[in-house]
Every structure is written in C-alpha cells, then in structure tokens.
Length: 135
Length: 385
Image (cartoon, rainbow over all chains, first blue to last red; front, side, top):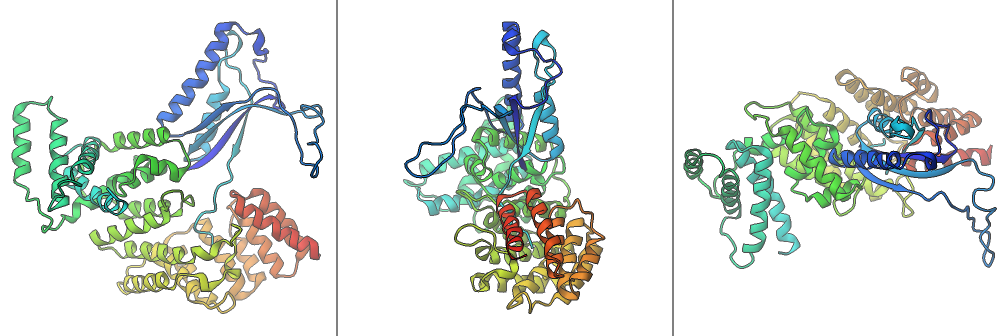
C-alpha cells in the first residue's frame, strides 16, 4: 500500500529505443498509443491500484517569489532546464516490484510503426504520512 | 437517520453478514444482500422502528439474498426458505461466535493482497462505505470499489468449514492500525474497535496481546506530533499528553494475557510498549528490561526491524558503543538504519559523523514528517559543530 508516481518526460529522460517524434507518427499510431494508456489506467482501476493520471502541456514557466511588490522571477519557460514533465500516473500498490511492473508496462506503450516506445519512465515513491509505529 | 443510528447500524453489518455466510450464502452475494437490507432499513426504520434490529436486518438480507437466486430452481428456493425458518431470529439469542469469527478469517484470506485484505476487512467487518475507505486511503472511490469487488471475487468460492490462522487475522488488523491516514475515518481507532470485537469471539492470548499493543501505541498518539505537525521523538514527548486511561487498560489486558504463559510476538511488543508507557522519562525507562523483551521477541519473530529497535534499546541500556555493536548485526538496508546510526554516533559524541548520517537518513526517509525531522537534526548538529 504505497503510492508511486510514474513520470513521463517530454525531455530530460534518456531517449526511448523507438525514438521517433510523435508528430511524425501515423495518426492511427497516435490513437493506439493513447488507447493503450487509457486501457492501462482502466485495468489499474479495475485492480484497485489506480490513483490519478494527468497529462501536462509542454509549456511551462518557472516562478519564484522574489519579495513583496516584485514580479515573480522567471528566466523564461525552461530556458536553461533540461527536464520537462509530460504527464504522470499515480498508483497505489502493494510492493515496489508491482510498481516496477506497472512502469515497465507503461513504457511499452506503442509508438511509431506500432512497436513499443521503450520510453524511460521515472518512478518516484510518494512520501507518506508517518506510520503509527516508529519507536 | 442520525449519526448515532448509522453507527449502530454499522455495527450490525458483520453480525448479519456472518449469519448469511454461515448459512452457506456465497460471500459477494451475501454482502450485496446486506447492503440492500441496510438501504431498506434506512427507508423503513424512521417510520416503523423494528423491535429487534438485528433480526429484522437478518431476515430482510436473507430474503434479498434468496431473491437474487430466483434463477435457480424453485425446489432449491423452497429448501432455502424452509432452512431460514428453522433459525430462531431474536436479539436475545447470542450470535454464534463462529459467524463473525469466520468473517475475520475470510477477510484475512492468504489469497488476498495485503491492501485487498485491509479493504475487505474495513468493508465487511467495519461496515464502512466504499467512499469512507477510499477517503481513508486517498484513492478515488471507483478505484476502491474495484479493489473491494475483486477481493470479494477472490474469496467468493472459499468454504468456511475450518478455522483459519488467527495470526493472519491479527496481521491484517495491525495493517489497518498502522495506516497513518485519517480522513473521515480514524483507521487506528477502527482497528482497535475490530480487535475488541475479535477478542469477544476468540479466546487467544495473542489477540489480547495485539489489542494491548494497539491501545498502548494509541495512548501516545496525541504527543507524537506537535501543534505544527512536526514529529516529536519519544525522548522529547510531553508525557502528560499520553492517554493514561488507555495505558492502564492496555497494561491490564497485557498482564492477563501474559499470565496465561503462551507468549507470542504481539504480547512481547506490547510488553516493550508498556515499559515505555510506564516510565516518567526516557532516562528513567527500564531499558535493561526492554532489551530482555527484545531478546524474547527475536526468539519468537526474528525480523531486521526488531533487531534495529533492539540496537536502540541496547544503546540506552549499555551505552552508544554497545548500541553500535548491536547495529552491526542489522543489515544497513533496513529502513531507518542510518537514522539509528546517526543517533548512536551523536550519543557517542561524534557530531560530524552524526550530522552526515542524519542528512543521509533524511534523503532516504519515506515520509515527509520523518524527513523534515532528520533534516532538522542534521542542521542542529551542523550549526553547533
């Protein structure tokens, strides 16, 4: 019963094995890819392991509070950064092994040519509330 | 239907469900039938309160269950009806202990994953709604609904013709207790309620041991975090905030269990918790006796976590060097190993090493409160050193 976040990256993660930009996939391949993701989410919901899944737009801005009355500091959308998150899926599973299994499945989503993307998925455990027993 | 009535109704669920399952009803169908009977009770009872709520619910649930089997032959249905009529249904009659007990065994079935066993227990024995369980686990209601219905399918073919293993049941209740989340439902309190209920139907010193252990831990909960939600370690806890009523009850239950001379791991853990609860301060704690209880515990259940906690106790009883020596017997992959090492090195006066280990431990912490606590420890040592 631990939650994990599965992060898909626009950039920052190593290139997938089947590395063809999505805008050069066939339309059906795009459809199949999205269908795969939805099917996986449905199956995880059916197994009682799904928590949340969201896609993020590839645009974003870094913001920092820089004192009252000053505009938020930003050096533009990710001008210097390497990493950009594309979306996430959150799951609630019994073991790390199961989390790895789900992440591997997510990574096998079909891409160009209908072949698996072999996309790198970042797997991050959630910090949880402290257990009752610590002493 | 006001809150009090809803709560009373909730307590009837395992009793009614147990009767149906005992009569041979298939679990998932029986559970559905009980839920339907509850819906009917909410409709009917305000205008026409039953004289014997449990009997009323059992009768209606059994009828609903039979209705669900109309597709079966008429002969089979008549047999079921006639069987139902032979069972006396009054509140005066004691509930057959086995009915509820079997539900505990069913919900702790080895075929279920731990999270499914917990969810099914909260549903079938706790009578919680799917929404309440989902809230407690911070997952969507649809996800929890699926988790529960899968669990029900897993146990639906299970025949309850022989007693299960009570230690499996205790493990599931301890899992419920150990969940830190509390939304609408306080899972620790719920686990204690279920353990109390279990203690009324099964006479086993380890059931008492677990109940005592949970009461003793629960008694310290108000002091475990401060007003800002920060973790307060045992040594710094305001002991006046411990619930002395729960401690007294836990100690009494434990002593009665120990007197039966069938020691088990929960009794040993409860004995350790009782020694902590008994001490006016960390320094005045009977650490020597705690180490002895840890040795008993390791004989019963040798786990890396128990060894780690033993090393902490040895550090208090015999000094940090002895504690570090004991820590050497514990694999450093055990969660909180680095935090314990940091604490022992600090006690030994090695602040630089301790600060580095606290920082390392904070990076490995699995919950935010613990991470922040360890970071503060590192910062404290770095500021003074």
